[in-house]
Amino acid sequence: MTSSLKGLIELLKQLPGIGEKSAQRLAFFIMESKRDYALALSQAIQNIKKVIRECKICCNLTQEEICEICKDTKRTQDLICVVSSPQDLMAIERTNSYKGTYHVLHGTIAPLEGIGPERLRIPQLLKRVQKGKIKEIIISTNPNMEGDATALYLLEVLKPLNVEVSRIASGVPHGANIEYIDQITLEKAIEARKKMQ
Ligand SMILES: [Zn+2]
Image 1 (cartoon, rainbow, N blue to C red):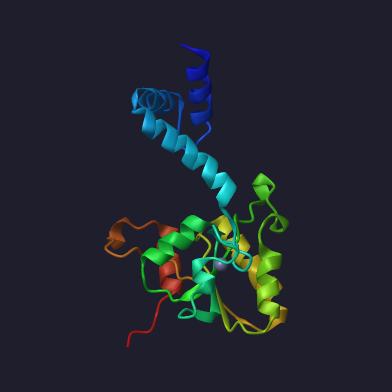
Image 2 (image 1 turned 90 degrees about the vertical axis):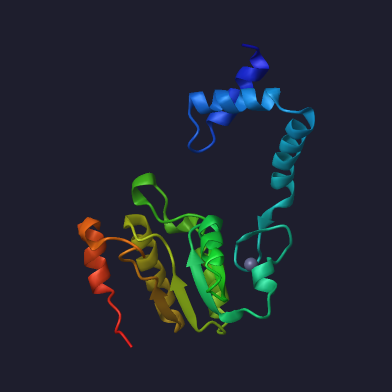
């Protein structure tokens, strides 16, 4: 195998979820693809590092100083949904039902991996709340150990700022069968029950 092909395989292997075999398959695919495609792919990768940055307000990824969502005056500006990643933001946007703004933390607190709150975009969030125009914060980190730890930490630091803090409900997924739900999920679902009306 030529050294340039080996080099490409090594780079592809560093992508999440890509092992040796997948990396080889991708490298051969790129090698055998049309020249235009390979060039466009490499250009897109270069552009993403040059052009994309974090929104000055919500830390979402954007090409402008302020992202589309923060600029949108039709959205409820006094409501912030806190998410761990831009991917989580995109997932909530796909529901088409949330009309507030966001704040992207770019991670979760994970003591076992040595990730403390100082690594997250928390000061930027506090700064937004300190301006006094925010009514409610919905913490939408994952319902697992790291996500819960992050939510609890945020609740602590937001408490003195006089803002309503809520946490997204976790529980039984829509369309699921109760019989097959794990014990913790079921427990949380009962805890987070909602009055029928
Ligand atoms: Zn923004």
